[in-house]
Image (cartoon, rainbow, N blue to C red; front, side, top):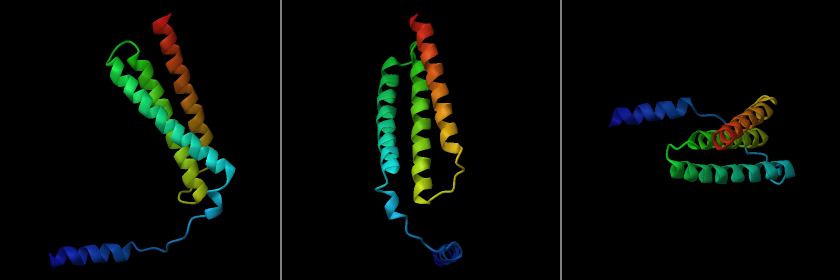
Length: 120
């Protein structure tokens, strides 16, 4: 018991770093608010896609709904990354957010093509 306490104390002491406050002005910034709104919408779409995916249960349209679920997941990850970057929590190159949006759009397009192929 004592050795666990000593190891935990040593690990916590060795990993201690200074804490900086986040930028409060970023919260009320309109682009950040819109990004947060898009994140909430993407999470709602993930929930709906998951429910529909459970309803189709391996039918012909399940592949399309899996692609839509993946697209909304990438959108949510992208928006979360942008928000964390704006708050200064992570450092991210400027091209990562737009490239994830292009990837999401490509997955959506592929899902629509699959749906058209199945229904048409």
